[in-house]
Length: 431
Ligand SMILES: [Zn+2]
Image (cartoon, rainbow, N blue to C red; front, side, top):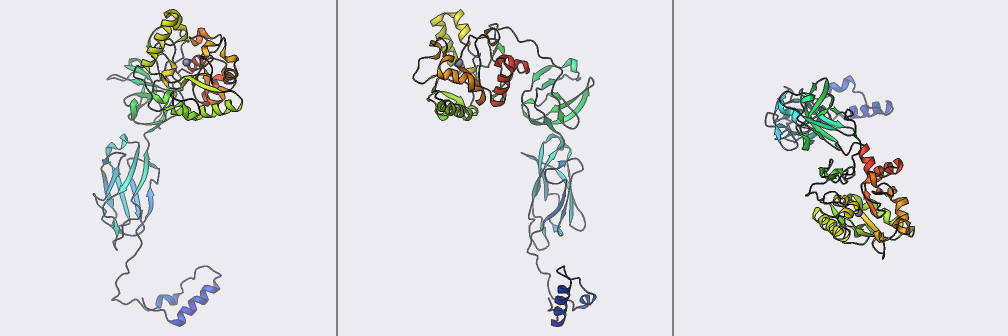
């Protein structure tokens, strides 16, 4: 570049000073300065081209109108192979067009867009400026309008035959605790709106919902009366490993034989005697509870914790041989019916003490009394309180506590009901 004449450079400096710090405004005389030498090559721009605008922006909703990108300078290499729209685990096509200036590109996704929940828009290949610098940034994330939002609540899913009808639902199931999924279709069936869930284990089910992807709590199904404590075997609802806090287990409902949580940890990790196991999700609150109990002079130990289905066979048979079948039913769960199989139940005892059921009432001991008063604060509830056998289905067990999390435990405590009654009232036993 030609040097600025010294006098003119001084003038620019003076003008700059006179403008009180703002940028000097080019004067008309500056346009008359010497032109660059015609032999000088364009100076290579060392800066990578940037994406100046993108519509929709990061996290925005992608729809059939596609994506438009503008660049900070002309780019090359933008063609059908240079842009791709990629799914979480695959690639779908996109029609790509670059405007004549090279500064804007449009990507229009193919029709299967509606089957994905989120997209990463990726600029692949050699997208570069005229000096050969690659794009500084090559991808960003977008969502789609077909994400289904589940508010906390109980959901019912429906599977329909060839001609969807609420009355002709082939299958009606509890969907349990859901957060997000995607739906590929929405329609009204018998006057109610439904979304077709198409991801996760509930793919293929319809749930009540709106075309904006908002699923609705199923308030149409009333909760039936609490069943009597019959000795039967019905499959329990909500037996997903993430539903540990809401599974209703009693003499009626049972877990599958193969139900065995994969996150069991030794109870020593919560400051207790070891060689017993509890699910990881309970360990932190268990440790906090034991610390608080110890500080209060209550010295707790584990009598029993997780028991597998086959472990419960041994336990139940042991009681049968000791007290007979009829008596065993009242104090021990038949295989599949035990909260111990959930991995979230513990039978406590006093450190160095005998089995808690050998006491006239272990709740009158320092340890039993402390738990009865305080366990709920740490997410634990006594499953079978005194005088509740008709609704809890088992004899009073002041040593048996189940972890349900602090929120649920506080709600159960507040209600004054047994855990079984409370869970059932929420509808967890039936959906
Ligand atoms: Zn127990």
